[in-house]
Amino acid sequence: MPKKQNVNSSRRNFLAGSATVAGAAAAASVMPISIANANHTAADAKGLPSWTSWKKRSALIIHSDKGMETHRDAIGESVITPLRHVYIRNNMPTMSDAQIGNRNNWKLKVEGVKNPKTYTLAQLKQLAQRTEATVLQCSGNGRGFFAHKPRGSQWETGAAANLIWTGCPVSAIVKDCGGVVSGAKFMTSAGADMPKQLDPKKALVERSVPIKAHKDALVAWEVNGVAIPNSHGGPLRMITPGYFGINNVKHIGKLAFTAKESSVKYMKSSYRISPIGKKGSQYPSCWEMPVKSWITSPLKSAKSGNVVVSGVAMGGTRKASSIKVSVDGGKSWKSAKFTGPDMGKFAWRRFVFETKLKPGTYKIVSKASAGGKSQPKLRMENRRGYAHNGWLDHGVDVTVS
Amino acid sequence: MALMLQFRNIIFTTLFIVSITSSQSWGDVMKQGMEIFNEKAGCSACHVLKHAGSEGNIGPNLDMSKDSKDVAYVKDMVQNGLGVMPAFGEDGILTPEEVDIVSKYVANVAGK
View (spheres, one colour):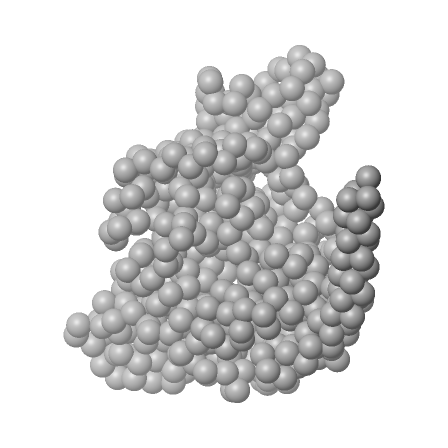
């Protein structure tokens, strides 16, 4: 397992400045590590926690009762990820039915607008509706590939899902409230899930994103045809299409348009992409997701002859435009085909690549492009193992017999 | 030859003393570890750990976590914190020795 860290100057510039995650990831350069344990299954993993016992245990890797990852081969072949297979990552305890009460009476307070209001969920349903397919992905998806073993769940590919949300567009709420106040630069969402005994500065999940994100955002009450389960942030969840999971605030209780980013820990110091050994609010926050893809089949073995390589490709806030596959570790590439419905730029596309393989071992990798940028070969080293989109680490070693 | 025998005896005696000391201190470590967990650090407010009788639900259930049996991982978390979890070592809430003791305790009893 090579651990040489050959970080290039582009990355340094990024980490010192305010470039986007997507731009930085494209410029990343560091030696890869083996992915031998990419589809890890813990022999001693225990069952599902009671609050999300409806999940399919065999589809999940249990990192802890607050962190569950979808097995690489369990996202399915139907573009949309089955809800029972979708990963869980919680910063706060999931709210119970008793805490939530009547879902239609759930309240959303809106501030930083000309006419501040508090809406019930029932009122939001009557105000406006939009349905959007988006990739929901934890900022640390791919952390398990980093050689320096960043703290946190060792996600590989499964802290991501493609989901269909229905909710009220934030733009409709803004319009109904007379527009945002002058000077507002951020859309700031706060969860209502923090236990009262905790200090909001340290524990409130409040996230600010650039105000431009509000045009695509919605506050959602439904996912994949059902009311959003409590464990996925129901009854109301902020959905910021193209932005990392943490910005899709669960159990949202307050939406504000602010001149400054929130000063809570989850905004100020957590989820910052800093060099290894450094931390601080001067580093970029986990906002827009970079272009990314990974193979979901085959993962370890295949029979010789015709082999269908398949996977998923996403573009973050840009539409995934093309996908290439290499069966020789990136020496030569061929175009793969997207298949299945195009659900818009915020969703992922399923891809297939048909090839003929003789018995032997193959390093199969995929490389997606979006908005004129392609996945980099190598990961962007950073302290907490965020935003990994390097294609080499995400490849698979397949034995064909 | 006599020197070698003397040296061997010194080694055996040392090993015996170390063995006894270690045996005693391990029990102390476990006892102190549980006290730190439940009282000084207050880990019990946020974590389930059956051995300590705690049922906190802010952070991960330590009996279910894959990492809580890894003393180095636990120590790193206690030292530096993560998310809402305070940096007990870095912020001086616990002494380095206490960080070490509570980490050994958690890693030893998690899942039991």
